[in-house]
Image (cartoon, helix red, strand yellow):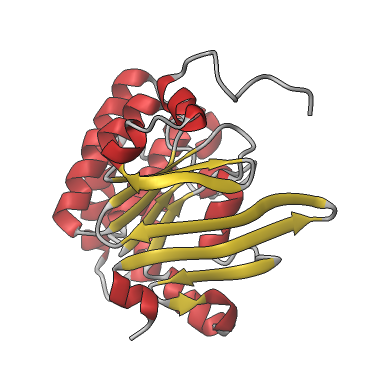
Length: 265
């Protein structure tokens, strides 16, 4: 059995470095995501959260270091093996038109969710697909928008459609990048409750990035803080949120004084 599987880690990044040209975005990321829990990855804008998430799916390759998912070293997988591994995962990713949040802009809201279900569950009847699609659109408050095209949705609605699709798949690993983007406070709290309930019911592993500290505190079993391309702190939610480290404390408290400051890029 792979070492990561023995240790209970669903996702593991070991000393991951990523360069884009001369820019070193990740500078040796070490990240452990425990199986069967919700891990929240926190960090200021530009810290490397989305680049880290992209490595988990093998969408980009590290310049150096190791990425393991369910004990499998992604660099050692064939394309078919990587595809099979991705089928055990679901995602809500950032993106730009025509793939904002991974939605297909040629399909309506209903078909964006149903398409994924048909692809994963080839033996399902259309009745099953319809029931699960509408149930999950209802969970995110968009059942009455099933016939709408994505280009008429707000950013928050698009995120909620993508979330409905990800949850409907009931994958072993669910990754949600930039969870709070475009979502108001009340709906964000309700979605936190939904994700908590789904995780408890399915026992899946969740990896979530967010800027919203209230959402992070509501969701997280474990927390990792990324800053300047490195993991600055990680551990149980309580241990990180109560940390006396100046950087971590400033990030989770929102205080103005501390090592984080405005600077020219």
